Length: 51
Length: 473
Image 1 (spheres, rainbow over the protein chains, first blue to last red):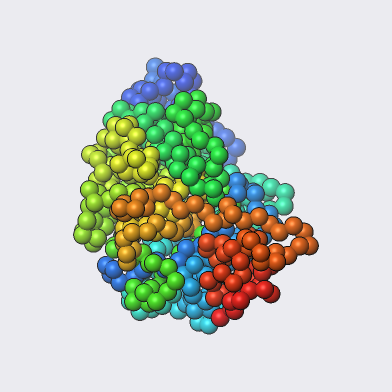
Image 2 (tube, each protein chain N blue to C red):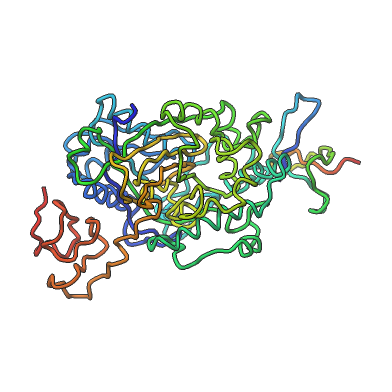
């Protein structure tokens, strides 16, 4: 569970999940990029460490 | 409104862990708590003409009025969502109604049996034996639920984790809140955690719930009910108990914070806070006192970390200093400088989402301040010496501060219930020695014999009724 701030959108925050990351790697300030996941009838924005 | 309204009585049912009360309905518990509070005040329940509650309590005023035999219903108030934090707002609404002359005797009540309806944080499904399907979720969940943000623990964990990042607050500092509350529960035989003290080491080693919260950072899940009776200060003078006067009451908070519990979109400075700062300003101004005047605090603790934030918002310490503020053990009474939740509170006595209003609170002066939505009634008893009183019904975030009396009134009064034993099946106490009334007895302290019972009205479940020299009004 994470709050992800979108710096290009006036600092808007999303409640989301950070995936493809070890718990120890996760820290405030980690740069992330969005990954859209299709689940049944919804598409959810999730985030992974930026590459 | 200062000093115009008083809390004249308090009543509680027993508290049991979640799902532990199955022999009576949640509604019956609400009524029992109100009956106990009425007896404590020396009022007949028929005289009640108003009810106030919060967090969308299920036990509505018309049903309560009918069940209790109220002659007329003149006021009902419900705090709009806000969870347990609404408890002091409910007290405020009752006080405003009395002060405005809209009602004369208002019961503030909260009953909660999650086992009979639905467990907070559990989404979907129906447990066997449940009375009703889980209630629909607040609309604000739409932003967070799909991502797995299901529970208050997770919501507050995000807020507290941000505070830890910004100010260096540590989990161990939160432990001081838990340890202090648990220590106070050892003085309170009615507390669910009575007999189970807690150390900082145990707090640190408990299983993870929602980082940074571990098991003992989270409030209890319990069944029970409690109620306060409010009347005008003038009427309170003639009633049974030494009353506690309301000094001030305030509710609300930052405009964006309340909804932010779901969306986490509140702007940065107030985001990692308990949303009490704007309410505190109004409360202290209304009460004519400040944090320096407070000796005992009853602060809503859904989670330990939020208490640290509340202490900052309320002005007990600077912003960001909540962690270091508690490290010297000041929250642990009676020796601590600011005993917190002196009956054990939501972490150690019971959690029916209510403030620990009674025990140590009906002692000398107290201000109640809950957190989100913040509401602060500040209360002062008519006389300032003796301890007494106990807790109140469900609360969200509430905190209260009391002025310590010379008599050391911050210690919670031992529950009279500890002296009770259920009568042996088929037997009746003959009156020689202690009165052996069952838990239905609404008299406090439990009388030693029928002729010693000072109550003018008694629960119909009292086995002593036939022998009782008192008569119902």
